[in-house]
Every structure is written in C-alpha cells, then in structure tokens.
Amino acid sequence: MAHLTTCLWMVVALLRRGKVNLTCWLPSVPCQGVQAQSKQRQLSRWLHNSRINVHCLYKPLIQAALAHWDKDRSYLSLDTSLF
Image (cartoon, rainbow, N blue to C red; front, side, top):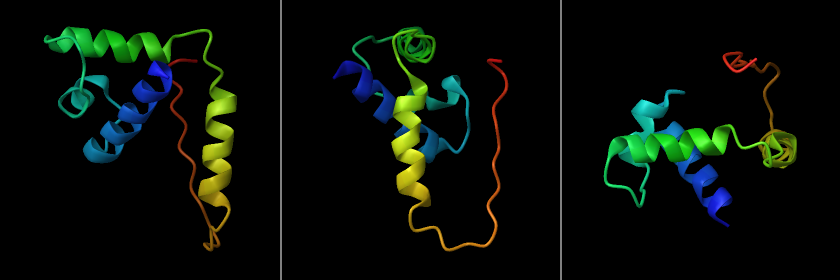
C-alpha cells in the first residue's frame, strides 16, 4: 500500500507542478521526514525500486486514459533520462 500511496502522490505532484522534477514536487508530497532530502529520497527510492513493474502500473492507466479519446492526433513525449 505504501508503494501505491507514493505513486499517487507523485502523480498529484506532477499534475500540480507541471514538471517532471523531484525537487519541484517536494512541496506537493507529504512525507514522514521533516527535511526535503527525506522526501526526495523516498520518491527516488520508489522510482528505482526493482520490485515495481512499471508496465503493470502504466498499462491500465494509459488504457483508461485513451479509452474515450476522441482526438484525431495525440503526441507522446518520452523521458529518456533513465535509459
């Protein structure tokens, strides 16, 4: 459950801040730690956790988002910083 909670807070932070940047997300993410570094480490650990299968997480989200897509064109932006 903690993994899902962290994931959801990261999505909320992304939507609120409009940037893919952990440092920018910190004010939008609640955390047990009092220092900003604690929050950033928590997000970073989630992103680099080998037990989390991103395909299983993203596939249903993308399918739900595109299920009622009425546009003729869509744009896809890939973050290749981890590749």
